[in-house]
Length: 259
Length: 151
Image 1 (cartoon, rainbow over the protein chains, first blue to last red):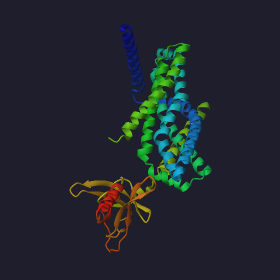
Image 2: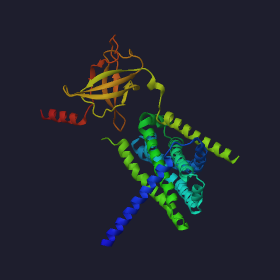
Image 3: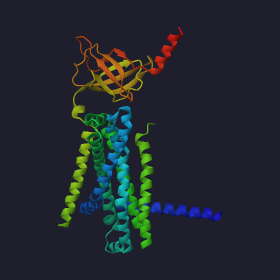
């Protein structure tokens, strides 16, 4: 019994210590204004995590928009309310699915890659040699990746939203024959710029911070072994996915809760 | 040369994001330049506005001519004061315009329908619409019907 308690205590302290290390990492990496000479590094990382994620984002967005339109259409057609497909689709995508699915895909596509990259740099002692040369690896390696994530995820979310609405339009209007006027005007009547799009984007920025933070920390903190790195990569995807979904609920409560 | 393709790709990526933002703002959320256009506010008192919300439509003959800007309650008289934002310059509505809370669609969204009168005077900023009919609440109607049935 005592051993069990002691074990729990140790695990909790270890967890707390990791959280503390992660916070220090984030603060140290982001402390100080970004220097203009770092812009090139950030651009390179936006290419890696943002541009190269475009294909998976566009394909998923199109399928999700199409399937939501299909589901809404078949159900709403029973009440003769096919015109509501557009607004239902737009609200679901802009408020929830856009930010959440983009962040989940980003965690799987780019977060894991970030962890593996930084973990390998650590394993091959590139980070230590940078320190030897007087270059701060936090500013040179970690900070540009976090900035790139914070820029890329909202941009990807915007693209996701657009493609999903377009996919829904193709299915509902072009294929199933809903009225295009009703599709767009129903959407425009209900969707608000700040209330739906703006708050969705706010969520997306929060997810970006979470995912990049977890990814970078897991890479930086991984044991310098092959096994440690594979565990760190897995943990990045698992932890960031859970964090995204849990914080999505909290954010929705704070942003849309009526109290 | 390698850096150049990277930069071009990132530029295209950011441009796609901006285009998506414009598309979402204009086509999806329907931001129009109308909001910066002229509008004026008139008030109307209703005995019941159940289901009416801020930003609900104000229409005449089925055409949207404004939005509900605010809804307040007058506890002394027990009625609701609705502030209607009418697009355009004052002088488009007669002073004896009547307002009615109606229901639209299967989801029961409430809106305000205005019907013009024959007065020569026009409603100005801050004027009140006096001829109003509130929302029909089903429970009240049934209650009234049952009372009448008992008589």
